[in-house]
Amino acid sequence: MIDNSIDPVRYPLAWNTSYARKGTQWRGGFDLTGYSEFLDLSGNVLELGSGDGNTAAAILPKCGNLVCADIAITSFKTLAMKGLNCLAADARMLPFKDDSYSAVFSRHVLTHAIPGDDALMLAEINRVLAPGGTVLIEVFSPGDMRFGKGTEIFPRTFLRDDGLVWRFYLGQDLDSLVRKAGLSVRHFQLMERKVRHEGQIYPRESIVMMATKN
Ligand SMILES: C[S@@+](CC[C@H](N)C(=O)[O-])C[C@H]1O[C@@H](n2cnc3c(N)ncnc32)[C@H](O)[C@@H]1O
Image (cartoon, rainbow, N blue to C red):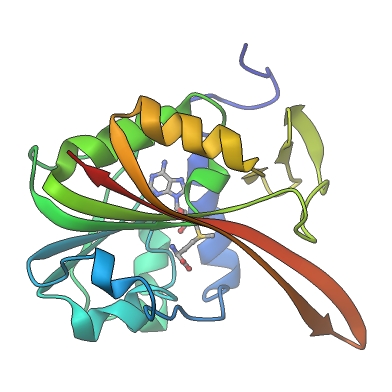
């Protein structure tokens, strides 16, 4: 059942407004240590939902040919995206040929999809990955400080006032979705950490998964 407070097709376009208003908004970068041995970055690499380049900037030096795809064209105007190979694309229906990427990064993108759309994105990732290719996925989980903000439109899925969807995954739900898409799970990691902001300590929690196309 689709919640009637959002347009089930156009809702990700709220990201266009978000980047137009805020510009660069993601921090923290990304450390490939411990993941790179699973990933063939020497050929075509796709960063799906590249946003303001937080991940792209970290992986670019290691990639043979990095393609950055995002539904929000305004994200390509942010500083870290300047000069990168960017393409406006919807992760639910990618404009790429089958088997065209040796590696895909999808960090905090499924997190912004309603149930059903995440399955579409995973099916597309499986389709565009070359056999033996690997995707690295990161999503938020319910222990994160952002959990519960907004209106709950599906279980553990919240619609914020700015129109953005935030979904928080249980490990078994993500595992099951990834397997249903036809991918083989090779790595599962619950990342728990604390951050300090204006004197307060807050919990961050996410799942990092790597899965391979057979
Ligand atoms: C939280 S940001 C993550 C950015 C980046 N991956 C990172 O690690 O910093 C989520 C990104 O996913 C993009 N996105 C959300 N839904 C999408 C969709 N259906 N197709 C393509 N991109 C999407 C948004 O525009 C946004 O840039």
